Each structure stands twice: as C-alpha cells, then as structure tokens.
Image (cartoon, rainbow, N blue to C red; front, side, top):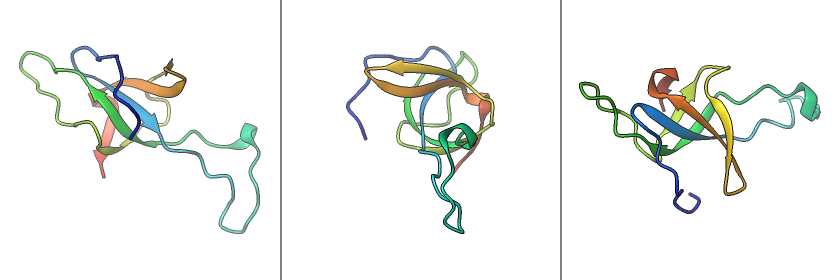
Length: 93
C-alpha cells in the first residue's frame, strides 16, 4: 500500500483507491481508454470515525465493491482516489 495519506475523511466517509481497469478482453482484444468501464472494485485507503450511533464497519486495507457511479473523484498527492459514504459500498471481498 502507498504511504499514509494526510487526509482523514469525516463521519461515515471512506477514501478508496480504485483498481486498474482491464486493458484486454478474455479474447485478447485491446480496449481503448475511452471505451473502458469504470472499475467497481478498490482498496480502502482511509476511513472516517463514523456517525454517533453508527460505527464504520470497513477498515483501511479492505478490498470492496461499490456502485458504478459512487463517490467523488479526488486527487491527493498525485493519486486518483474516490471519496464516498460507507453506504455506497456494496460488499467487502
């Protein structure tokens, strides 16, 4: 994992580093950048403290699945990351 971030998400927010999109199909066809789907899988980098009555259940280092259009893209220390609510995460894998 990369170095520790100097950013702490608030409340039930989570910062996720998206996995790289596939560049080839199973048949070996190369997919151009404009046709690639956004990945829906990533690694949790930082986690907020949770809400008063709802602690956060994911932790840094977890691999998660999230909705296709979840989160907001941000750049921190040159890394492309997503910040989203924990409720946007569908599963821990």
